[in-house]
Length: 449
Length: 147
Image 1: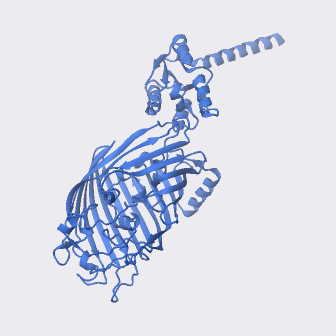
Image 2 (image 1 turned 90 degrees about the vertical axis):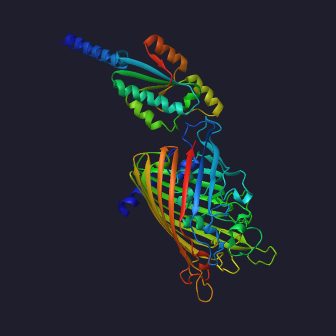
Image 3 (image 1 turned 45 degrees about the vertical axis):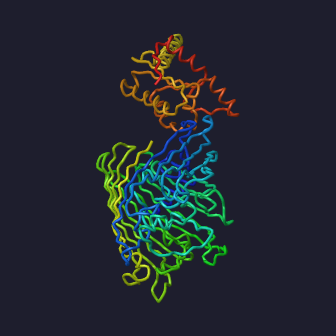
């Protein structure tokens, strides 16, 4: 398929597009719409994920303290743990079945993860949206829902091929929100200190790749085997929190073009290219003077990628970059670290990363996966003493999925991590914390109902 | 000569009329005749009734089975023009399956919606659904199946 053919196809689509009717297998449509005139008032659904994780990292240089990349989240209290990391129940459908133009989606989280840990557990609404399908080519979704962005964030988590996100998705895209106060990092903690909750000082849930706002979107079938999708969204830029705390709005844009091979639902087969962007601002007080005096910082993200699925093979590649509000550590309720182990200021920082992954399916039962992801955090940071605080995070993840049936699977991941600040000696600067980050083993059981 | 032409034309026209009549009553010569009812709100029944129709065509062949799907009550949504099964319905219609939408349900739904219900173009809607089923079963020897 040449560029000329692609442009001709797009031009043809502009003159003769046909809006795809619901349930096309892309995440915008799967999560935002229902099959037209063939959905009930309320379809109850959900999923549960139970996991065990073991982190084999060595303690910090003093042999006694640890930092969060060496601890199991979200509680960050030990290096191995069982957890019900997700337990979601929701309902979706159409309140007035005679009118196929309106549908809704509501989902709540009862598991233990970054969404609920900030509130010491409990239940939190993760999705609550209404979609209006009246305008051909411009469906409107309003409420709390997944913003159109990076593939790992946009896709449904219960069909995610791996247990943990790539580092770039986890750190660059899974947003942590500053507390309305500043507190500095105290460096590593002993296991006993960590066990008393010393690391978790955030008082808001993670953004969970979601926002509260309004999105215009749709998917168009070009000729027979091509689908063009787009989405534009304006949101509060405050994740799962039902308020706008900074008087600024985030703007999201997304576009994808897919060559369809067949199938349907979350496992539809095809070759998809996609691109997205997000721009916004955040309020942050990093003065550390005990007086709340925040300032605005940009938060810009962008990415593009390609995903291929034609059984028995799957392959994905995505590149992402960001400027501003770069998260520099899960134990930091701010983005500026002061203390014995400086790790620089991410509020005006830059970062980028990418991943490539592949999968091989053997029948309907077995699936073998391999992923390599790279994250460069605080690129071009001036650092201290002539050494940049930039760090590199490289991870190779081996994975196996065994599918008991189409709703139940067991996933094993072994992640080998290589993390460090290249301009600092071993044990110096950020490496005092990062040295010793090693393999992580994870086993997860997923059941969808 | 003129009389011969007139008689010939009349015979020819009569043959044409008989053929036409036969073609509209092809169902009467089908080996099997099945009317499928859909009247449920459960959306999975829409898929099920279409699957059953397809299975009948595959088992007997389109020329040897006459299938009609009658939709009434909440099941009428299957024959909405926007229904996501529209392409499947067209495929079945192209293979001889007939679709009837209950006229009473259509009127009631239009009143509830506040605007006329737009049906799939393959559906006819000139009688109440249960009346159509009764006529097919008692007068034309159809078997009623409600998946």
